[in-house]
Picture 1: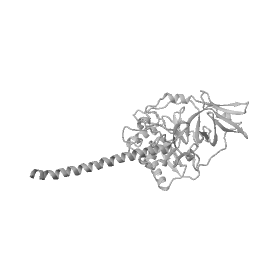
Picture 2: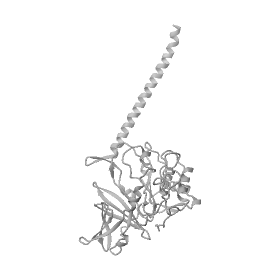
Picture 3: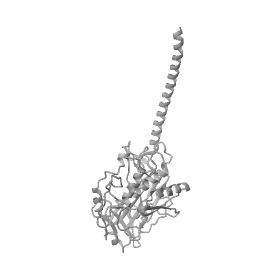
Picture 4: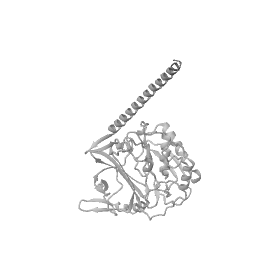
Length: 397
């Protein structure tokens, strides 16, 4: 009996822990069920069906130009159209209310690495030049790529001005024309109907010039295009607020820009606050666009905190100033990714300046939780901006 006397409490302890373990298992199972149904809910909430195909719902793309002052007056006329022959496309974009839904995800780092791009594309895109042709029969003008393809722009005459009416076979409504003082670069921003809903696109052209050789980094840095030293031509850079930011957001962005400055290389970045701003496509403004009601993802599980409208001059072999989008619309989705404005903004400014993704070590250009500009980041940036290997004539006013 004495042995049994001591065994009974041990059995009670084991039984107590067994019941506790069962409760933990039940709780874990319940959490798994909740997560599963939550994910299913997200997928169902964020998707729709169009013509039998599943699409992700992004929102109204007009949110990307909310509050912008638009210039709907064309700079092209029946008297000057031939001055715009021999230009090449340096950027095209397309934002729709829906995008084809992608099931599952590839490895996000492998999908977004910038160190194994096909460099033959540089020469390919450099050869694409556009020329204007007049159709006397219907009195329209077609801006055509001499290499062929279906990316023709068709203009109609309205009071001697040439108004863009069709792009790639789609009837369009052009809402913003822009060009710089030297007329070396210009852009069109237009809307069109897609699956019964409004989409928005921009296309930017740069005056062609003789191909310029490009330096390659002797170090193993990650730039926009492999280790090719593509960089901005102007080192004194002003980025403008193209939308409403609160005071705390402005403070964060000013501090972040200052941290990218390289005084010894002459690279200076400043923030300009403005209430009167053009849309992101304008060639005379480097916009920072706050996006609060639109998504650029293609499924319910991707997290995109920001992005840059990358523009490469494939003939001068340089980067052109572009716009930075901050996706505040992702801010509530902490279950997918952490939204930290300072980290996201620093990362996107790095892309704006010419840095690619760096996944091998601690870097602001990676996807880990590293939120500071590292010594490696500064070294890579100095490699781009401390010499004049690839400086060409400044095209912006």
